[in-house]
Image 1 (tube, rainbow over the protein chains, first blue to last red):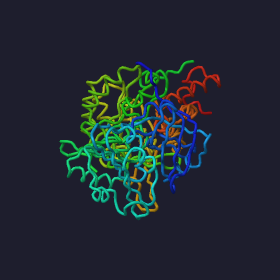
Image 2 (cartoon, chains in turn brown, green):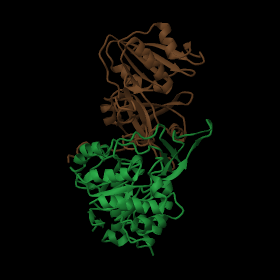
Image 3 (cartoon, one colour):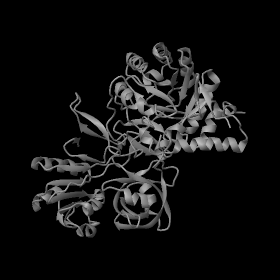
Image 4 (cartoon, chains in turn orange, red):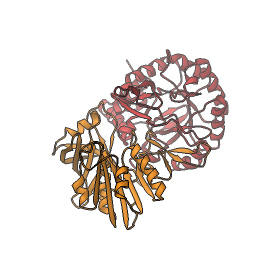
Length: 258
Length: 300
């Protein structure tokens, strides 16, 4: 068998690792191949150094700069693994594997709607950079906001927060209704309740939508079958399980059951 | 340096295999390594018909290990034979098919249909803790373990490995039972039954509440059980449970294993099997072991 293009974990140099909001960190590392090959919505496996933490942490790629070979990831500290990452300094190294998964499929249309919820926001940045046409970005946060200025370079940005600390108080769906969001294609990444509400919203308006899902992963490469989501089928049960890491993380809103 | 071993008449270029359920059918790993380098690939469990498995979350990390409650999701033996066997046969490695069922009849049915497939061995899974029927129910009762081994063996022309559960009081009893049932080899250990609780939500992390515990944290339990079984029966043993390095593999071989299987480490590093093979060779080189078979059961 042809053994070209064998992929492996890479030890990469951290260029920057800064807290950009409470508990949310932006890490930039140098890895030419990932920077060149990443499609919007893909992720990397990031590996812990502590032996006690054995599984990789899947973290979405926020943006890439292929010429400089730079990759930016944005992650929230939710457990000991991400806590470990947050303590790393520029100049140190970390092991990564990627890019992994299937990302968004950019569709050429006049107006696109991008919807991000919390830490689901970062992968939309590379997408908004690459999409043609007019882009409307709706971001929802619990409190505060981040990456907003970066999005503003490419699109009109609307913000909703649960506590009203930034933008309109309420959900992004409330905000989209208030603004009268319109477009021919929707892309979204965020928590499941937001994606479920958005699925209904796009369904009612007959707008195609690509939804990026999150699930607890084991391997990140499609082997462990840990991170599954339900997808409609014509079978007796009405569904089958697909792997979020390998078949996704981006799924067609019409096929996925949330 | 001689690295090949023979298990129930099947020759493996080296003792290293992949543990069922951790390597899919090999496709996912072909991007990361040369599958030709493996002694054997033990594929994910297949049943007579498609199994959907358990709802998510199915995975939880624990200290030095992980829990899974996948529940043997698989597309069924027909799809497996059509899609996976031709892929695997491109490689120069042994194909070991792990089989699952909810009843003895289902195990027999899969076995019968696999007789049409070009495979090297069958591994009988009577030890998965994540399925309610069949699975572990057969693997924790000596009488049932012997009976199902005998029934499957009647229909298998390939050598039969029986995979043992650690969730028993005395694993040697089950090992003796499957030996009496006509097994050609045993593999051990499958996962230990475990649980993780989210203390803030006061709920189990896994949707299935409990799952199979695997990874480096279980290695001492597995080494102990391999050694106990080695002293109790005559059959060759495939040892597994937390193997991450060549040194881990050597430890299992000294305890009595003829072959070893790498499981959870594949998730920690897609090239883990390559590391284990290279690690065994390095150990042999450094310690003057000419033939890997010298290590089997060579505990002083």
